[in-house]
Length: 447
Image 1: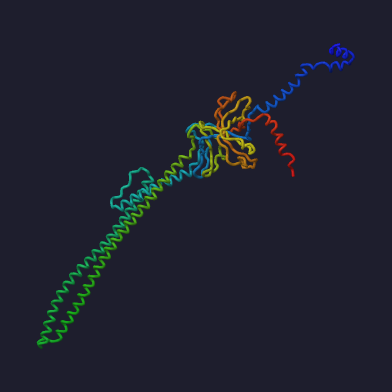
Image 2: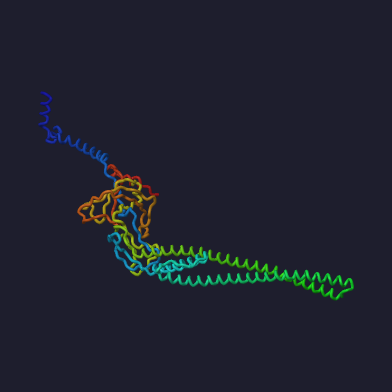
C-alpha cells in the first residue's frame, strides 16, 4: 500500500477536528498576516514621511496704519467751540472738523497789531530825530496807526523844542562868554597903554625929585597909581583866561549834550527796531494761531480717534484732540505672539489673517508676511493692565481674499484679528508623539 493510501485509511478513523487541522491553510488566512504587517509598515511610513504645516496662532491682533497719520492738537490752551465729526466718519479735503474759541487768539492778534503800529511810528520819529529831517509817517488808513502817529508827532515836537532850547541855551552862554572875552581883551590893551604912560610919568617925577625940582609926594603918587593899574591889568588878564576856560567848557558841554542826545536816540532806535521785529514775529504767530482755530482736513481721511472732550471743554497744549488717517494709507496687522511661540517665528514667514468681524471659513482671509518682531517682551496691555508676556509682530497685508462681504469693503484700523503664522512643517508622527515624549522627559523628576 502506498503512503498516500495508508494516510487516507488512517484519516477515516480520526475526528473532524483532526481532519480540519490536517487540511492545508486557506489562502486568505495566510495573506492576513502579510496584509496586517504591510498595513503597520505603511502607517509607520506615513507617520514618518507625511509632513503637515506648523502654524502659530497669535493671541490677538488688530489692523494698524503704516503711513503718517494726522494728530490735531492745540498750540495754546483753548476752549472747544464746536465738534463737527464723529469717530469713523470719512472726511473730505477742507471739511471742517472742529472749531476752537478764538477769544485768546484774537486778543493776542490785536495786541501784536497795536504794538507794531506803536513801534513803527516810534521808529519813524527816532529816524527823523537822528537824521534831522521833517517827520513824515507812512500813509496807512489804519486808525490805530494814525492814533500812534499823532502821539509820536506831538512827542517829536516836544523833543525837538527841548533840543533846540538846550542848544540855544548853550549858544547863548558861548556868545556871552565870547563877548566878555572881547571886552576883556579891549580892557587889557587899554590898560597896557595906560601902563606905558604912567611909567613915563613916574620916570619924569622921579628925575625931578632927584634934582630937587619936584616933590617926592608926586613921585610916590605916580608909583601908587601905576601899581594900581598893574593890579587891574593882572585881574583883567586872569578874567580873560577864566572866560576862555568858560568858553571851552560851554562848547564841550554843548558837544557832549549833542553826543549824548544822538547816542540815546541811536540806542532807542536799535531797541525799538528789535522790539518791532519781535512784535512782527508775534503778529505772524498770532495770525497763524487764528488760522488754526478752524481745524480742517487736509486730504481724504477717516476719523480714527477723538479725545473724550465735549463742547466747552478746555484743550491743553499738546494734548491729542482728533486723529485722522488718510484713506490711501497702507495698512498692516499688528499681532501678539505668546512668549512660548516667539522662537519659531522669523521675518518673512507667511501669515494668514482672520478678521474677527467675519467668519473666515465663509468670508475668507487676508494674506501677508511677517515684517518684523519686537526685540523685547511686553507685559501690559493697551490700558496698562498686567498680562502674560507677549511679543509684537507686524505683518504686511499683501492680498485680501474676502468674499460675500458688504460693498464697498475695506480694512479699517482697529479691526481685531487672529494671525496664523506658517513657520514650517513637521512629521505627523512627531506631532502625535511630541506630547508623549515631552511627558517622558519631564516625568519622575520631582525632588
